[in-house]
Length: 248
Image (cartoon, rainbow, N blue to C red; front, side, top):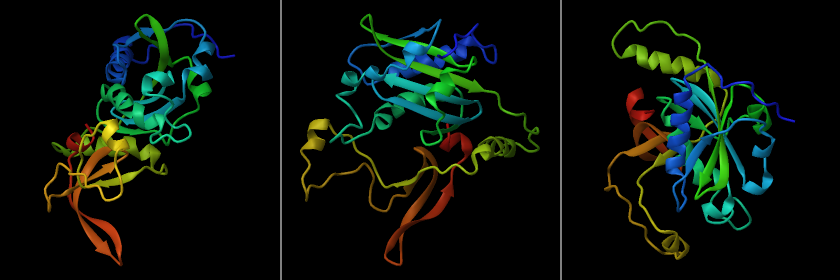
């Protein structure tokens, strides 16, 4: 049984947890507005398998955090990640998780280095929110903000920011993350995606010859140009972005 927290943790202001929950609620892909309500009492009910797939993630940056999210499948257009599904629940909910952790400052969000749900909910420093829409519970959100170790004061303007971020990201040196090269994007309705057939051409939002985006777990960190090496594609780095540009 998951223990009942004795009080809201004092590691950070309650307002920071609430801001994260409200940012997440505002980005959930639902048809009706979602309200995040601070949850008190036992957390056993939070782990309800009938409420949809659990998506957990870790965030490392100015503030580091572990987060857990569950939303009823019908509000996400069925059951993402199920048999025949084109997308996973983590893909559908990632923009919401990014919005929540975005209030913590610059950093990197990873769904690969996530903590176990029972361990997160059993921690007294975790704050839980019930997600409600049209008066009905549609899921829950849990967040635990971790204290970062102090780092030396910057010695030169700008240099300290990168050093500070590198020190914090250094804690996950051995964690593998997805590095993606993106040559362009477009927006399509689900109807148009389902109507795609072999031979169809999808126009992107970038002109030929424009630099490609290099993303670390969905965060823009550099620019480059696509090259061919021994018949395999590669990317030549042309610009490393400033921390505030790429990770904010």
